[in-house]
Length: 219
Image (cartoon, rainbow, N blue to C red):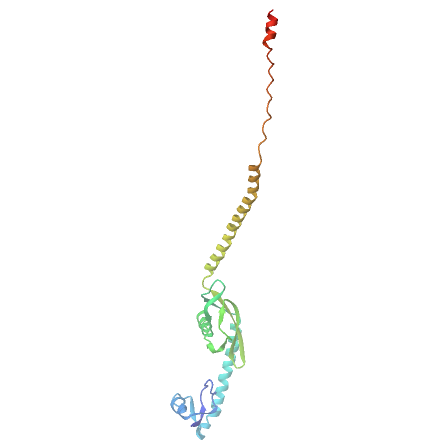
């Protein structure tokens, strides 16, 4: 069963002050009326409508001015969010609108409903982002968000180790090439034979005279 009520306060998803809406009778009886968020639609209560409309206009004008100033101020800020991430920049988890709202409160003391932070999908990698803010029906803004890794020192050390390994690898390569060049030289040295010194010919001894000739000389 439905009943008509006059809202006395702004209720998200239902209406603003002075709006006449139809709601479930139990919802009106158990929640709206006890919280003084609405009154039954009667002739006596209709007289309040003009006063409620005036109050609503003042509230909306104040919200518009406040959100316009907030949009200007937030556009100059950079909200830094530190997360755990691997060497490739991929995070262990994601950054949500709720996390951004918490950091705005923590870093800049700005209270902003996470529903006003428009994220098409959670942020899953480190880097710089521009996030759209729906601050008011007629006011939008942008917020710069920088997602940083909590372990930059580890990444730097890994990069340094990778660079340090390269020279060692190159040295081994040079040594190997040097050995390959030297091997043919050694082979040539082993294959070569030392020249032999020329043989010196011995003088030929004079032949001995026969014994007969010796006897003739004695005679």
